[in-house]
Length: 324
Ligand SMILES: [Zn+2]
Image (cartoon, rainbow, N blue to C red; front, side, top):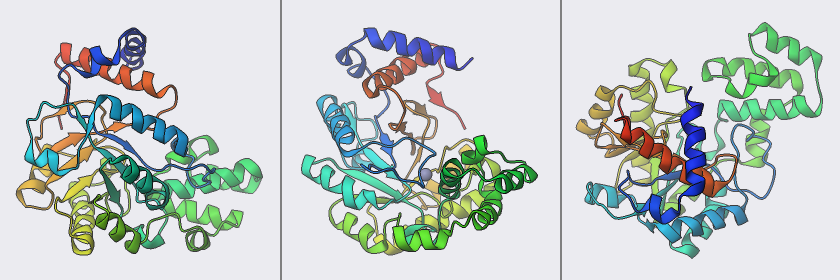
């Protein structure tokens, strides 16, 4: 059922100009990405990413219609009506420093990088990246023993990219079976930013925020664990990078996070601002903002226009605000 309004939004979006859509009242526009690369990244099969040319084209498009602002804008102007955008990047991948930041500096676009305290400096690999490396190997060299092992643990090749953190040990065993060494991968490929690189990003004027310690599925863990993942990673960011604004972006989604927890993060001074990934929507919590997943398949412009139409349709039926 949810597909029908999305489909209709796309059709209406085709007929509407950017001017008609973007200049009408809407929530703040917060597109987010993970990485940008001109190479195939074997650890990232779980979402599409842009190459540099595509990324620059998308940036230019944003700059045509919106004014780029830094994160403090939202603290200083909670009710601003200007057409602004703020970019962010999740997971703390090394391309943030090597490819993305130089482009942003050249174009004068501020951004926030949300990093995981458990992954920075290549300490550990995100479980979905483990799954990607495994799927890559299984696709290149089908292995019957590995497929049987997956079956024994109620997993299959088609769903391996959705494996949850609680099943990370299964991925570790499977990797051993396939001769994949995650520690070696971390050491030789350095997929993540180092703390030195994160400090340099901070000095260049970017904001550093937290994205949990281990990137768990928050809707699968109790509130106490959710709180610890947020507070520990936020403290790590504060101690290491002293950001002016304490910001946290929920990994995957904020589904399963209570309003009570969001309010507690603010009232206990753990976070100034928190972020979800529900797209162009208002949020019932004033210090919690929703971001737009920019890395979608299909035509970028059309996807964005459809997002605006979808917001307007939801607004018409009183469903443009996320409730927790
Ligand atoms: Zn993430």
